[in-house]
Image 1 (tube, rainbow, N blue to C red):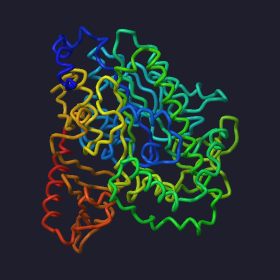
Image 2 (tube, one colour; image 1 turned 180 degrees about the vertical axis):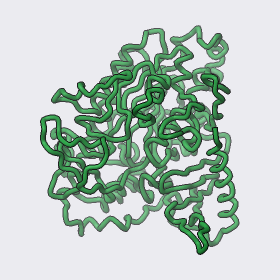
Image 3 (tube, helix red, strand yellow; image 1 turned 90 degrees about the vertical axis):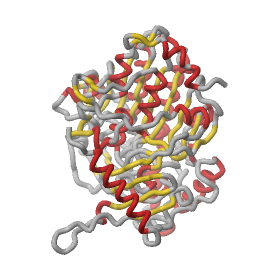
Image 4 (cartoon, rainbow, N blue to C red; image 1 turned 135 degrees about the horizontal axis):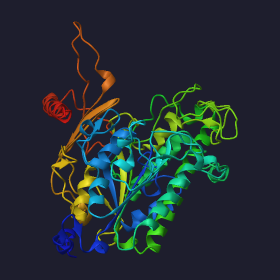
Length: 528
């Protein structure tokens, strides 16, 4: 088969004046991101949740089994859209004007650009930081990071407040995201290539779902997190998304043995609602796929599905906090927030999360959670599907890749040049590597290091090695000098579950990687 680069050589040569004369031949791009899910949740990555549409994409495309996100929502979205680490691309809770988004570049190339879902890269009072001002011609979604699935806060349609849209009794945010994505596919002109970004809030807290969707999963998690972790671990080996010698990490110390859990019915309901949220998202992705097929675009559409981080362990107390939590439901009932075992989650008046136990299951076989840079927080699956371009359908790639690689992939594929300046300002260089060679061979030809630093974690991943630390592990020495991070060192190729810390026996490797990490962190936070 002719290489991907060769196939598009003639196409790329036709680029002139920022537009391509063969617009209909340029591939469509659909990026889909879910919110706060664990590596093993999807069917083709080992989970019990029904995800038939994502399974079909995996079977017809390629699964990336060593893909990395950042450890929290907004920093991952910045990396995805700019191809630049968040330490460089984010300023005051929004994208820096010294970065350019993939939507901005493709819009200039004649693409119809649309977004449906969670933005989380804006300052509410500054429209210059909203999606329509960062390259998207159409937008329906939320500006912030969390909110009710029945009455989401800061819901915007094309720069205008859209809260009237959830006055309908049948409004459910996941469905609204899917339905608007379908509508946007229909809005693109037949001869115009499409760039669509679909950013779901499923399965971020709060645990909100419709009764019929929750009922589907009644009893599915009755075995509890201990047995389910074991069965997922075995299934993941069978599916080939972890190596056969990958060990299962121990149950997290904050999680009791399932047999000792005092509120089993409530705990099951939490996971049942979580599963229902993902189920509804998968059905919506099915509708998006159907719309691509009906429009004749599907065969020449690169669909990439990814997460923003690993499963979230946080347990929320019964106190109201933040403008994302309404005081009352749409019909006037008071909210009942907090992870309270005497209240079953799911309805609009509840506001719960699924907690340590189920996040530990979601992140099988890895350690820790969202907010951390151990594998449970940042090792996430990616599915790439493109009938005209990806060979070896259904294969699994262990090429180490990251969200920053998405933009250079899309730019190379569409013949788009990354600029030196944008809107008169110097632009930070993109640091990702195109995934097109991986699509073709499953392997990455060039070695590279990955860097992480946010919230409770910091890490460098280079070759077979990963140096990682908890930020809260620093502290102060006498005299006020920082002790620095308590680094852990893993051969991450042989020990992906991070169970054998080699820091004490390999101090030279620790110093080497720590020095490189410090240099990167200083350079990545350069002043603008």
